[in-house]
Length: 337
Image (cartoon, rainbow, N blue to C red; front, side, top):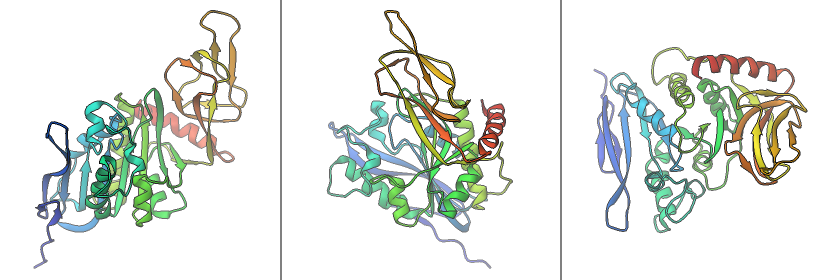
């Protein structure tokens, strides 16, 4: 008779093999002594395998990932799962309550890892996440959106020189993969320093739901789980993911209002007009042109600007790869938009 798999211990809870359990990790207290907790949904499979951490809202106003996590919960059966799945819909519980990217002390939690048990609030929360969640994982998917008033085309960011992360990124199935080295103090940087592969999904805008971002993100997480052989089934991808060679922001050349002419996900050729900048009191408009060929993978959604403000994020590709990503985007949009 096969030996039964050991329970998964987290916090003060032991989750038996083949079961699902909600675990609350004490994080801190509000000024009025109300306890704040991290909610972790643990699926502990009957067979040994990877431990995948899927987490969202490390920036409290990034909501798409929370909905991806919520929908993911109904798709997993611990009895048929290989390995262990940890789902944390809201990492920055303080920012989420305040609809803010930051913690109450205005610190960016994603610049505070690995943190310290004796530090300030951000440092203590980062320490809890590091040691209770990140250190327990073998693989991580970190779900993000653009900042407030900034929209991102669904994309994966990771160190593409790492074969494991690049394999996860391709399996995810986002149209664009961005080469991104570790940022000091980030959760991804801490995980990678411990030898734990972590990919970052960027899609949509802060404080807004995007059904395209949510549906493609949920499918991507399930694809990675199939890639890791945690669940059965074929990887479902619409179009091929293409690794961008570089990216840059096109900045405003004047102060004023913006009349945008090209949208997120559109292909641009060198010299194409991206937008017109106009003075609200009249006068000549200024054409903002694309410096190179590429794909718009991010943009500002607020129609006012100051000179020098970043307006369009454009990804560049080697050789004929721009044709491949352009075709892939057509398939992707037809499926999810």
